[in-house]
Image (cartoon, rainbow, N blue to C red; front, side):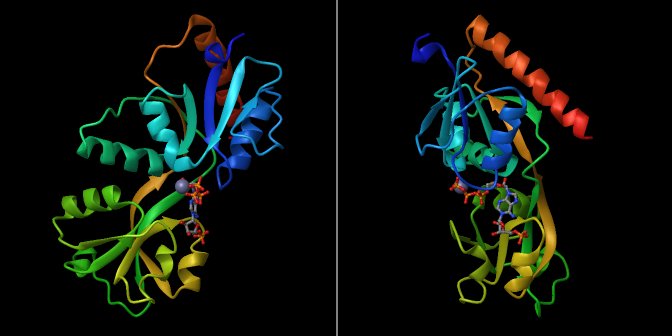
Length: 225
Ligand code: PRT
Ligand code: ZN
């Protein structure tokens, strides 16, 4: 079968979603050798190619129809959607299923000694985040002006470094906030990993293969519940 006809699935190369994504495919019966550090891994027993990329690239690859299916955090998917909407770019995709890993929340956090009496306490202050779109949407619904400080990493050190007054960052256990003298004050978005599909139609055989995989994935999730 030629490369073009194989179902293309994008997953995070290395990071918090990688292991669970790989395990899920393994549990679906896919045999993939991911030990080599290659961008594309071929599935040995099904006509599927796994593309291993940065998580931030996955929504765009799906919306541009470059890959067929992807696993990505809803936080990254929603942020990319907001960015593309602001640039009048295509934001179409199909949501196949929410997955049972990658759970986290996007929260506002402030220094321990900050007297927080609601989001209004942040009016006209500087908020550091990697998620400017989600933060803006939340602050707009609250009608609060603020200054966005864009940081793609080390967001949690921004207040101590004097770069920001508050942060808006992903939290799972809360240990990172605590270690940096910050307290979580408001959850603005809850996220899980999700399986998405390009809105471009698949060949009949690839659609049948995807339907079969999706049934298996949903079975695996239900069995764990
Ligand atoms: O290299 P690449 O761009 O692919 O990876 P990345 O570094 O951008 O992403 P990665 O691997 O950190 O996260 C991938 C996805 O995992 C995120 O987009 C979320 O959907 C999900 N996820 C779940 C998390 C967390 N939990 C999480 N806790 N992503 C990040 N964190 C970080 C958070 O930013 C903070 O620095 O973990 C720290 C907080 O954790 P706690 O446990 O101390 O609260
Ligand atoms: Zn990333």
